[in-house]
Structures are given as structure tokens and as C-alpha cells.
Image 1 (cartoon, one colour):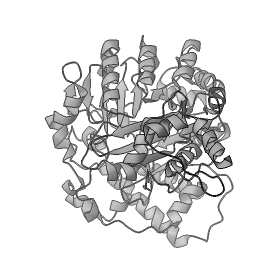
Image 2 (cartoon, rainbow, N blue to C red):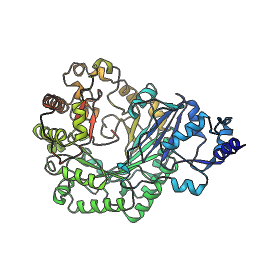
Image 3 (cartoon, rainbow, N blue to C red):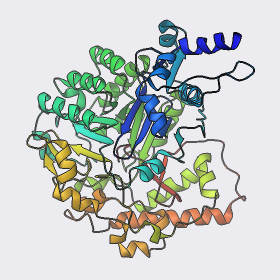
Image 4 (cartoon, one colour):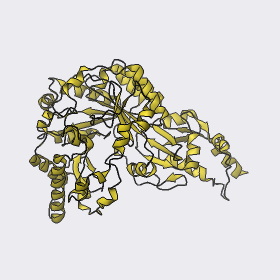
Length: 523
């Protein structure tokens, strides 16, 4: 009698999807996926687990009702404990922060997590194995494994306006690009609806300056209605009280803000707009006070090489993620004037040395001698996810491989559906065929395991040829290889400074250390 009563209590409990969790089902490969934008935990699910997840919505639902729809009965052991594997899966999903379980709607709403500063300090340990979870060592590995041969638009960057109130000296967009105007709102809404139908996970709104679009709020609300993870690239100079409230409602995963220095004059010289630093910091303050998640993009160039670490330190003090990059992109019209701001190879060496010296996390990766991947294993692998799992579109509706690689137009959303562009665009189909094997010289290169080759950098610095290897990337690869090897030879002989600075690094295909820092999450 007692065991039966205990089981009924479980069945009568309510279950609900977290407001910051996003689920997808991919019918053609018969797997599910769930992601939480606060913890950034993610998990691929098998067919049975996906069937369960499909029934869990953002509105509370009785567990018993869910189990009934699945035709699953709960049994109990001699101690009155439930023994259903489905209940174990529910508990795992709750423990990993994807769903909520409770006795009332009031309790569930109270438990629903919201972003607040300081949450990053909490380490989350997702469940490693439970019936229904598909194993993968990382999101990238999971995507590579499960979606190989099944390209789909998981990430989409949408330029909502070409208007910008700053003219940054290193910008990869040419001056004449800013002569255009806002994205037509109706077209933007149409595209967002198509992304929903395609199972897209993330939309990144960019520009120009996104908040200058006269109806940006309509696009944000539609993205939320369509259950898309929202990211925004901005300089934060136009964050009004109204938009603070809009952002509270749509709950963007991240608002990425360009900040070049904590010294106003340095920042303003890079933006070429006097007073821009103050307005950016004011916008940052507004967003942080409203507990809207921000990150900082701080490209390192000649103008701020002496003080960019102040931005990193500020971010650490505030609990804000800071990403840097020293490579810079040439302009999409192949004019390389903006690259006059790029660091010299000597300056880059200093930055890599700093990363090794001050960043304990990076240093640990450097010290760990990982197995070197055979380049031949990558012969059939693409260089990046552009055109494989991501796509971009400008204010005119033109689609591109990625936001920075624009010599080849793939189609226009005014005339074509995104699905048709994605599946039938001849230029896109041809670009997808390009693999590491198309760069035989790279396959034999001594610095291959330290390389971060990029279509956009190749094209923008060679009059549009994405197959012409960018020599600056080569120089950086060899430099990084030398510095890492030199450090490994002398490891254990240095006393490292306690003045720690966290350099955000990315890695090449073989997971060997590369001191190039990440410029855009969308890349």
C-alpha cells in the first residue's frame, strides 16, 4: 500500500522545460538534442529519450500524464523506490538543468533559473551516462559525429542593419557597405519563421549596430516566439530603458559587446568616435544591472596592445567573459587597408608568451603532450562549420558562407526559401566539397597541428581566392609551434607570476595548443 502511494506521488508531480532550455528533434537522423543557455550543458538523445522530451513543454504537465502518453508503467522495488528507466532519465534531465520537477506550478516557476552574475563560478558536472543519453566528448564532437553527411543550419547570423554609429579602424566591412539601410522587417520575420521550421538552434543578430534597426524589437520577439537561442553583437551605445526591458523578456543567451580598452582615449581612437567609450560602458552597466548576460569582444591590435589586458582583468573582476583575437580580418572587398592595424609578428610573440606565462589553464594545455593527429585523418574533413552547420545573411537578403566570407553569394532570401538555398545553391554545394585534402601543402606542413586556416582570411587577403593559403596564418602557426615547444623543453624551470590573466584560446583540428584567441563565437 505504501509503495503504491509513493509511486502515485511521483506520477502526480509536475514536469516542465526550463525557460533557458532549448530542445530539437532531427527526424532524418532520429536523434534529439537539448541545450541550456545558462549552464551551456548540452546533450544528444536517442529515439526513446527524444520521445519523452517531445512531451515536456514550457507549461507544467503531470509526470503521470507523460508516462501514460508513452504507455510506460512505473514499478517499485521492495523498498518502495521507483525502478522505471524513464524516471531515471527524468531525474538526470533535472539534475543537468534541462527540466524542472515539482509539486506545483508556483514551485516550478520559483525553481526556473535566470541568469545572474556570479553563476559562471559554479562548475556544472553533467551526467556522464544514463539510458537515453548519447555519448559525446564535446558539442563539436557530437555535431561532427551525428550530423556528418547531414548539413543543417544550426547557427544563423542575421545582419539587421548596415547603419553603424562607429567606424572602427579594423572593421572587415568596407565603407560603401554602410550606405545601405535596415533589413526589411517583413523579410526578417519570414527568415526567422523559416529558421524555426528548419530546426535551427541559434540566431545571432548583428550589423552594423543592431540596435539602430527601427523595429529590432519585433525581430527579437519573433526569435523568442520561435524558440531560438538569441545572441546579439553590439557596441552597446544604444541600449535604452525600453530595450533593457525587451531583453529581459526575450532572455538572450549573450549580448556580445565590443570594448577595446578601459582607457577612453584608446577605445575612442579605435572606434574613431569621441565619447564612444563612455556610452559603451554606460550600456554595459545597464545590461549588467538588469542581469542580462554579456560578453566582451576585445580584438588586439596596434592601438591597444599595451592595455588590452586591462579589459581581461576587468572582465574577471565583474564575472564577464572576455574574448580576444590578434589576427584581424581583411575587408570583404579585398582592400587590406584595415590590416595596417594588425600586430607585427614580434608583437604576437609577446602575446603568446604572455598567454603561456600568465594563464594557468592555457599553460596546462601547453604542458600536456597530446597525441598528434595525423593530417591524413582530416583529408575528407571540412575546414570549419561554415556552410555545414551555419549560414549568414545581410540586410539585402543575400546569403553567405559566413559573415566575413562574402566573395561568393549563395542566394537571396527575397526570391528563395532558406531551405532551397541550403540544399540547392550550387556555390554552396561546391564550397561544402572543400576539405583539408584540397591543401596538400598544408597536409605536409610541420606546423599543421598549430594551424587555424580560415576561408575568410584566405579570400579577403587574396582578391577573393579562398583556396589561396593566407601567409599570416602560416607565420602565426610556426611561431606558436616554436613557442610551445620551447616552453615544453623548459617546463618546470620557471617560477610563474601570481598576476594571472585568463587568455581565451581556441585550438586547431588536432586539439594542440594554439594561442590565437577567439574573435566570434559564430565563426
